[in-house]
Length: 261
Image (cartoon, rainbow, N blue to C red; front, top):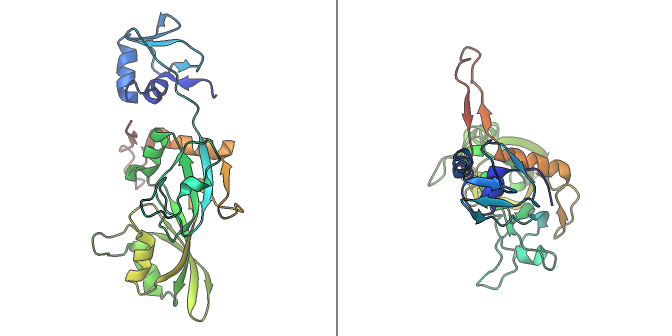
């Protein structure tokens, strides 16, 4: 297990309180570590320490599982399916318990994070943090300059207008094109709907990146643990994010956005 976890996070992962409420408990002296009251925010605690909150013994959180999978097309991103279709539960090693972070469409394959760390999953999916996802799409026809501008500015769909996307054309063939599209939203079938709205139905779609996680050479249907570098990159989504001024003149408006607990 990892050692040196912040006390407020330790309490949150143990189900005692949100991290903000945990800070309040610490500040008022309601928390003891190995019999001693602690009031310092940011205190580190080990999983082997004896922790009490208002006299109640806190059970240490278990070590979480973090896996990267290459989801095949033709598989639903749930653990069970009433229609008896294949699910991502089939990808997990025997005895491992984790759930997918977000969803990939039934007919979309690619990189998928599975974990039992609910707090991290919440931060990764929260629109506030704008985690980028890159998709490689084979689409019918060729994109015009206007199509590219529309994707970059945002495409009007039936129920919402998508945010601007990053686009890179990989190949252009006689009757289809291959492009990489990077978005930071997670609406249902959003990428497919964006191309369809422009008259370019998607022929095949694969997610190649989810935040810092890249598909790389991971085989279809294969699963691997996160690397230390990937884990550290994901952990940054738990921390306050500084929003810098949009212009050089606006040098006084620097705010800190904190993730919800």
